[in-house]
Image (cartoon, rainbow, N blue to C red):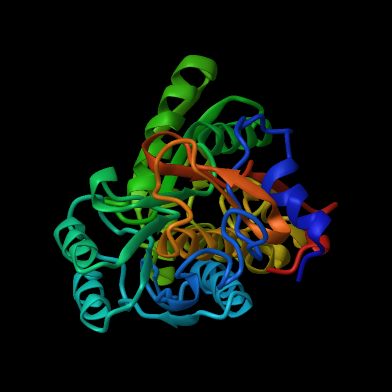
Length: 348
């Protein structure tokens, strides 16, 4: 899907948005993570790792979890994916409990709520399961490690900068988010509000609505926004389901080319809308790298190569070596801006 160099450019080396820290990526373990037998007892490690996304059938998580599966096959573990059909705060609890009862070695979770699954996760940890969150975190005391796709500040700034450029830094905008409880979405939105207030006085944020990471709900919320705010100039959707649903609505409406849309999406979802002029530019990291890193980080925890403390390092194979930061967070990389000039260079 990607060459090594292109992955590095997408996940780590892009500096145009100045997010800052390099984010930890996963790959074939060649150093701190090691091969399956690189450390004492590693050959006996329980490398059965289950991925639990916010919901199944979400293209973003299809891609990220495929990256996790790729990594797990490389180091000889056992991959599984489970999850709810809909992304609600408590919908992941039973899957966590079942995974723990089945005796998996690691659980990789994108949390629908920072609190609602904490008891279940800590019960799993008490049973010996290593818990890694990715994409959307829980409270830090509910997991061993968080694989963060980018700094919240960098993600927020990239989206504000894109919409400001596209609407001439003036006019009404709205935000179409995922669920109201999503940890990452809410952090980005608060930072976007601050950035807009501090640096874009002529842009008015009129409303934030929630599509619950459901295509039809997001589609309907887009229609409602445009009916409610006839002077709306732009929409920011920091969720792959939301941005593609909004683009689908705009592409066949009178608002195509008049209302700007940006946010976080995958090239394969957004290609037709970029090429037909519905969308000028949007951003994302490589979700396959995110899942890939999460799997290798989980392996390193299971084998005892890292504990999750600040300063721990592990090798992410083809993606290089990475360091655990404060609060047991590993950073993947800067967001990358996709547009008509480069979108065909990527396939995910």
